[in-house]
Length: 580
Image 1 (tube, rainbow, N blue to C red):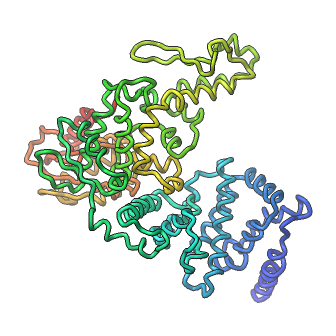
Image 2 (cartoon, helix red, strand yellow):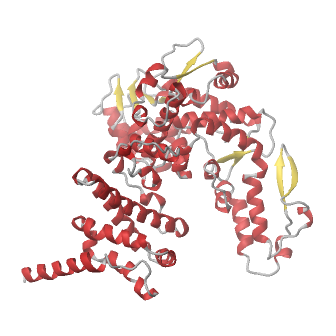
Image 3 (cartoon, rainbow, N blue to C red):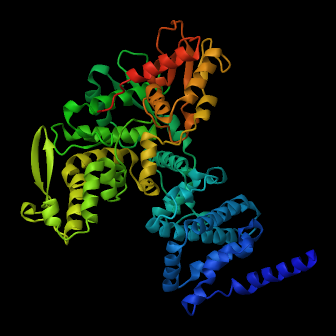
């Protein structure tokens, strides 16, 4: 019976491999004939890596050969399938990409490998574009984390950069190479961070050496430049931080800003192992975000900041904040800046919408949504709106026109969408244009260029302010102990017992207390590496945090109750440095 099954299976395989898939038409005669493209991915053997080359990849090639109209029909069907089917399809071709990369060296004919992996990537790209419209799955479903260990990301980015720069006389060895950077949706944020660093090194190399971009192999050796002038060194005084930072950063070139940052506070020891730089960011942002300057409006119902409609500081202050945010990204320093996703959308040329206003100002956002959803005809009488917006500036309420003569145009059923669009546009574009332009020019001075095209807005936000992918066990596993403490010390054991029993919000409060942010670096919890050291203080003293060094002074408490009470008291008394 088994041999009979094997023969039947072999016959089915042969018919699939030699007849069915190769003979799939690029222009099916009717819609019914197209159903094969929905059915085939369900065939179990397509999920088996043994048949990726003979079945799975050829199916992708057949789909990619479809003429424009049948291709659109398939996209439309994909947009209507259940998320589970869609996810299965995405995972199938992600698996194929990983399989091909792992077996790359076994392909004797490079062009075959290129054809196969291009087909798998292009099919994923087609699925990704469908998903952008219908959101079957989160965008990070398309990430292939294994890529960081299977591909030299630096080299891939350089090849992609050269291709984007339109290099004609490339060495033949890379003439037909597949660059994975052409498919940025498969890279997770850590891989994109590596590309950002590669881009910085590349731009430094080109600027300092006047490098000829044709010479790829010279570009692949980036270390000598860093040895020559490895750091961007800033000399600042604590009592004139903003002025000194403005002066120091204005004298450095755009290329210098991409070097690793070292900060020297005047009159203090000049050793900066990262803690001084972090302190510089914390103190500078605390000063710049001081409400007395009115640079930002704090939205209480969302705990977020946005540019003020009116303020009286120089444009270069906003420029400085932009540079600071860019430097924080390049120096892998998480900063506690509560900007909405709209900011990162604007930096990536994505227009903010009503969803972004709901994030920044939930009350305003809900009101506008109610206006759009209102089923009655009596919108004019019910809402009593015209094309204006009321904004408070230094205690005075001002009425701003959203369109010319907006105070004379009543909002009705036919123009309510236009009103909502104009309202959102005023908040995110018109009212803040001056300040945002100064901010973005500073940010893009550090983080600009082709590399930004590879990022999603939420990835850019995670690079600047960290992510919320908490792994509290990893925080404990990677902790370092000083003084009398070790992982087995009774007080340390009491500390972790207490900490793991905290609710999520209290754990986040501890992170803010200890590190200056309640989010974690893009490289994950392990990269925080907190330090707990013993002190000679008695049990009546509270734990003390040295934020710049992720260092906790922890007295030797004798019981869990005392430790929990003292730590809670320390957290409750911590004020941080935000606008709130």
